[in-house]
Image (cartoon, rainbow, N blue to C red; front, top):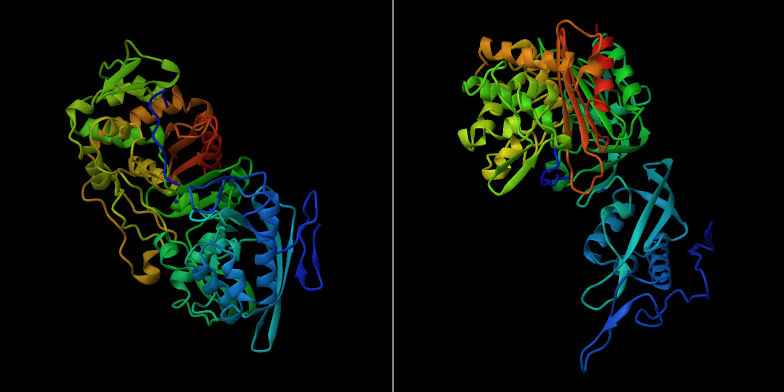
Length: 554
């Protein structure tokens, strides 16, 4: 995007054990394990007033980090929950989770092995045994703690978060061993082949979501497992429970998905070439999801991401402008180098401009100010209504079969409304949403994407309240084809015609040197969208991923 004022995005977290006591290496002089907290540190400053004791400030010293980490890990390993919790800045939460570690998770023989401290952070490995009704299974993982200074008195303590106990835990989550409340499922692709996280690494979160939704109705029986059970905050964030150790297998039920094994395998290969890449492929005529892949597997950005979509949002904006008869594809419409709106000065990428050209030229070149300069002619709610009524976005009612985020286009005013027209401001999307936008243009009407057929559980799919006119659709396809032939998408889409169209996007993010690169396109009865976070321009980053999948799909 251009050099405008940026809008921040939200963010869809050697030493050993001797004689049962955790030992930590400390550079310099030897340290008594339970040292006095307010003495001897050169690293921290202190403050005081007359008649009051010194309160140390600043980061904890190496000696303090060593002392606190040793105290906490040793107490945890020995099962002295009260002492371990007292070494944290939230004894109540720490005590509850550490008590549940043995009582609810049934973990015993805990061995904690710390690594060298990295400033205030101390990594450590955990080995334990899950023991439940005569069945034992080993558990091993890595975690870390961070020592912080309590503001009230300067005392160094372990900064408490549930992730200290296990990195998959969010605050409010718990660890539980027992008969899983939800039986396992065997997920099948559209051809009847089994889908596994081993074969398709991106599907780990998807398989968890399928189990959570369909496990109780798919005909299986539950096994015994150690699981992360999500609390209210995680449930609100649409995170699924997660199995850590299986003590006895249940009998899985069967759930058939719409995924194409060939496209899924290729999507996995493509995102594996880049860091922080995600892509989704749909069938426009039905809404069937054919592939979803993410290069990072802990969170499904493809379905649940909440990112500014940049100029790919200009598809929705153009739909609105065409329907309101504010412009046509071939109308003369210059794109100024700068445009002032409500105290903001908006710039185009590289301070470019189009002095004489059509709206189609500006769409193909992704020239920002050719869109923002319509803001004075629009109501604050116009873009929100267009997204909801024609594209089915932002109403939190998609039911694809697993947790998903269906976009957000809030009503905004002034400069923020102008920024929304180019996919910044408060607009948030993910590849699933933007693939659906391209699919809606191609098919002429919104089909809610889905991973599991609604016939399986008779759920109701979301619908859009109206359909774009034939004339509007024709103009959208014209400008998207122009972009694929001659505009910013031409390099990626080369050789893919004739029935195709595309749009690129770059979304600026505060704190990132490079923007998030977006690309959405359709070809025949396929539509796809991808994002490469902090990757740069969409045509160069996400474009080749999307184009490869469209090319493969024929």
